[in-house]
Image (cartoon, rainbow, N blue to C red):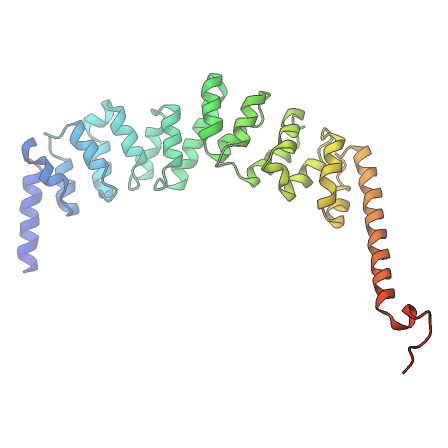
Length: 286
């Protein structure tokens, strides 16, 4: 029985490799990898059929690789893009295709869940390199729609609206913002102010700590942030030599006062719970 099935598949594959275009719909829906691989070698296939095949996420790796080697792939931008986005596209096939893609198609590759991580990373690097010379309008689109890493790179601009758009990017994470704020080279005052006033990021504990280390943070923001931070964290950041000296002195004094208040509260609480002290030093009557 298995032998008969194998012979049937072999015959079907042979037919797929030379069938006329009228029979393509039947073979494109075929589930057997052997048949699909044979179909990709059919000389009668054109761009429409190849694109339909590439829409199949379960298309065998060998079939994707075979499509990439066809003449149509060299001439069709849509086929190149579909191959680069295919989850079963071999890395050695996908990477050379990335250089042919437009900026926002590279972004599609980065944001396709099934694309391997290393291919996404290379596409992201290409976006970062090309992004330096693109028009402002395209940069604004990237700031709003790009990956978190690309949005974070746009935070380093000196454009007020561009920074605002990047901070609102849904893929931007706290880790991205912290990395930008912790740069050894001075962080732009415009960015510091934007983050310090941002409805989302200004509420994050570790971002507040990072902002306090930056000399250009306005003093009124320092006053707003410190009540919600622990004394131990405030004392730790005071060791940072890059800090504004005025802020450092204020934080040391603030920490001492908070520790003093804490001791007084503990002492007062202890007195309230001690029966001898609460009775003026006399033992309570039996």
